Image (cartoon, rainbow, N blue to C red):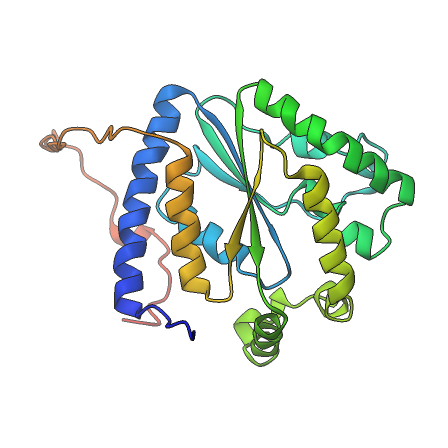
Length: 262
């Protein structure tokens, strides 16, 4: 049965309603001192960045922040593997969204031979225990895998080639991944077999339709953190105080941006 894409008007309306609920959830996280980690993984061009962008759009960056770590430095390569990720874990009253995470080792590092066989095996042994330790410490760990078909990924890669504002998203690593689709599939299946644990299960998002994926993921995230509406009472702005004889410097003393768009 052919799926029908959601209409833009309906999508925008539903998205905004969900974003309003995210603001309420954010207030609850802050009030209750919750510690929330949300991991977004999936193939290149699966839409992880798009849903993260919509989640944080109206949220307070002091409460909800995004961790998108670059490639490890030479120093970080000598650290315990999870060490650089631990530095980004939340304190009480915070939510951190990982745009890719420690699962790099089970995916790109495994497929592209950026880690040794022993490092990979050690990750598979230690990752479930690491995550159970996080949960025991009071962190709520939520993991999303964005699943996209080969055909849809191909379309998104092709669009990035011709759209100037999206070319930065197409790295040499992305191009190389095209030739290793099967290897990535095998790595993902093995990763799930080891890390889809009761304390922190994987939730798979069908991401062939970007807008559907965003709505489905956000609505699911809202169910994972039960919250009450802590919206404050309407705020009344106080009257502005009089100048009390103060005279401001003339506007001509300031340097303004040239009005290219008057």
